[in-house]
Image 1 (cartoon, protein in one colour):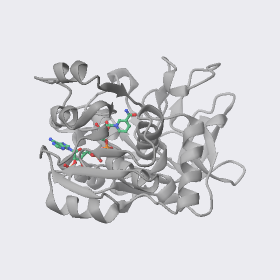
Image 2: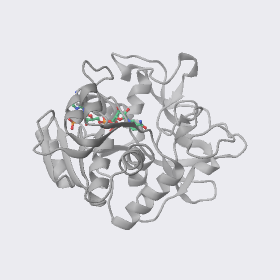
Image 3: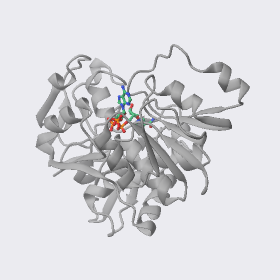
Length: 322
Ligand SMILES: NC(=O)c1ccc[n+]([C@@H]2O[C@H](COP(=O)([O-])OP(=O)(O)OC[C@H]3O[C@@H](n4cnc5c(N)ncnc54)[C@H](OP(=O)(O)O)[C@@H]3O)[C@@H](O)[C@H]2O)c1
């Protein structure tokens, strides 16, 4: 079948290991099924995979892609939950120490078909297009859990979203606004700051700019470049939720004194549960909120799509269609 896969790793030139070609049809273990992929969305995770983060040489070739919306074997329109638990795991899938994401242990979604456990299928409402639905399982689910589960954000809270242009960040802005929060956002780029306002941010700031007020919570996916600003922006007792380190994980100053003196909470967040994905889908169906699509390309143009993401020249999600 058609597939876009990693054949080798390179930290300096990750796209060198990307192949648009053919791979065998997926293996389908007991309890699993296949989905015919109609749309998939790009995530920074796909670039990390091409750099060898989270994958070992002996797992190559690996079909990339965590996200899929498509048609199941019975002809139903479905969204695929990308977190694969160990057999027999019950409870919060994100806390399973043996969990993986599609394209880590099992082949990913940039292909004609993907194999997944039957329990990972969530019905797609007719109100969402395949392209919109494909954005939900990774970036949007991560944003949902950061805000409403790990961050405990409530209507009326003020939240800061760092790196407004990113896939997770645009989801954070849209979901926070729809849930009645006051939304502040930062971006390095003036055009992206303007788009963040159009998306629902109440105020926007240059990356690192001092805010006029402290906030109840900060949503962090940028890491090194914004961490200290995030810590300094919190009110006493406020919460920083971190789910990514796009600019790097190493910190010269983590703001530890401020963390203990102001009794700040620093909370990690990763993906979300199948139930949270179902709740996110219901929220979008009920509110009319939809993912911002930076661009939609046929899947064989994955190299161009990944190059745009690597350059940071993106606002929202890049979607690949079959
Ligand atoms: N833990 C999880 O479950 C999970 C799930 C999804 C994503 N993630 C992680 O979250 C991060 C974001 O993912 P994504 O898919 O949203 O990526 P993305 O679409 O590529 O967005 C990254 C954003 O980070 C900002 N940024 C990058 N370098 C920066 C720098 N040096 N200084 C300031 N801002 C910078 C940019 O915002 P501006 O250009 O607007 O400044 C950019 O739009 C990635 O590290 C990813 O691995 C984690």
